[in-house]
Amino acid sequence: MIPEELVSLGERPLLVICDYDGTLAPIAVHPSRAFPQRGAAEALEALQRHGKHRLVVLSGRRAQEVHGFLGVPGLRVIGLHGLEWPGRPEQPRDRAAIQQIVSRLPQVEGMWLEDKGWTLAVHYRDTPEPLQPKAAALLAAVPLPEGWEAMPGKKVCEYRPVGYGKGWAIGQLALEHPQHHPVFIGDDRTDEEGFAAVLGLGGTAVKVGGGESLAPYRLGNSLEVVELLTLWARGCG
Image 1 (spheres, rainbow, N blue to C red):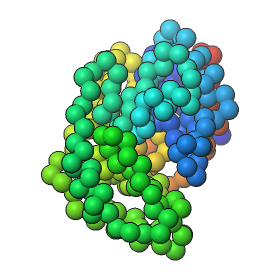
Image 2 (image 1 turned 90 degrees about the horizontal axis):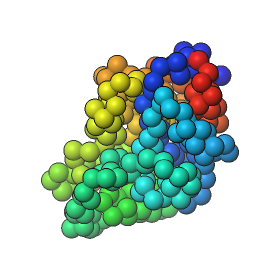
Image 3 (image 1 turned 90 degrees about the vertical axis):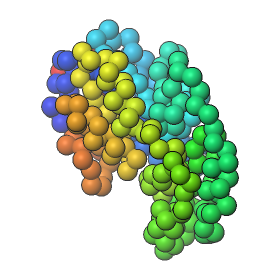
Image 4 (image 1 turned 180 degrees about the horizontal axis):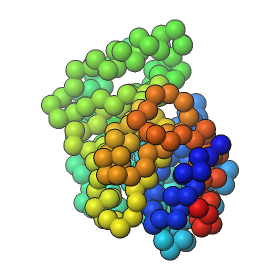
C-alpha cells in the first residue's frame, strides 16, 4: 500500500529521481532480461508531460541500455552512477585499472563479469547459494587501484572510480532544480548513498522492497512505483 504522505507530495513541484533495476523494473536473473514493469514507460511519459515536475532516471547501467528498455523519448537518463552524464564531456576510461581489478578477482563458481567500459560489475547471482556469502566477502576484499572503490549490491559488487556515485549525482541534480523537492526512489544497497544525500537536502527517500534502509518510506515493488508515478502525473495529492 502506498503511504498517503507520498501521494500528497505531488502537490509540490518534485524532482523525481528513479533507479532502474529493482525500481522501474523487477530484478531479473540476468541484466539483459530486466524488462520494465508493465506501465512504467507510460507512467514516465505522463510524468514528463506534467509541467510542474522534473524527472530523471539514475542508474548503474549505461544510459543507452536504460533507453533501450524504456523507449521514452526525451527521458533524461544518467548512467554509471553519475559517470555518464548527458551534455557533459565523457569521462576517460581507466582500462588499466579495470584490467588490474580483473586480474585480482577470486575464482568462484557461477561468478561472471560485466564490463561497462568505465566500471566493472561482478555478479554472483548464479553462484550456488551456500557460496554466496563467501563470494560477497571475497569481492569486498579485492585490493583496488588507487582512486577506485567497491560498491556491494544485490548479489553483485561494482568497482568504480572514487568521486562519483548516486549521492554525488543527486546533489548535482538538486543544484540544477533548487525550486523542486527532491525524491529518490531506489531498491539496492548502492542506493543508500542516494538516500543519505536526498535526506541531507531535506528531500524524500523511498526504498523499494525489504531490507534495512535509511529511507523513511517504503514501496513493496516496482508495480507500486509505477502506481505512485502515475498518481503524481495525474496531479493526485
